[in-house]
Amino acid sequence: MSTTLPTPPASAKPHVRRATGSDLDDLVALEQRSFCSDRLSRAQYRRHLDSDSALVLVASANHHLFLGSAVLFFRKRSTVARLYSLATQPEARGKGVGAALLEAAAVTARRRGSRALRLEVRTDNAAAIGLYERHGFRRIGRYAQYYEDGADAWRYEKTLD
Image (cartoon, rainbow, N blue to C red):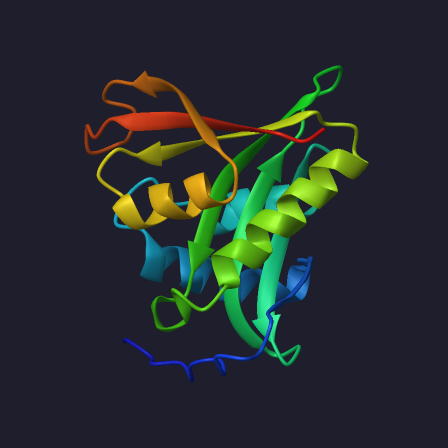
């Protein structure tokens, strides 16, 4: 069943907050709509929501319309945070949701003592690559056959100083 969600107004800046257990259904539904493979499961999201080493952020419009999510990982004694996942409702793409999530991820990582934020992105995902590069990420490597379907990934990093 495909549900079309209302599109946020162009002038509305998404509100980003830490996800809670009550967001679990929306997170799983967004994961299903956003990715064909390499999806986070309900159990994984549940673990991340309760973990000290993970942080799940959600973006919404007017504090109720669920627009996107980001999953960050932190390792003890490491100054590098990892943006593991960034997902945006298809109807909300190009409306600042990804940018708001990236900004919140960088701010949160800085507050937790991280000096850099890293991520992987499919080499064929031009929209995501453009978003990351516009927000100060630079390409630092490549992983062959990184994804479940055999696609390669670029590795990116942003310095948070």
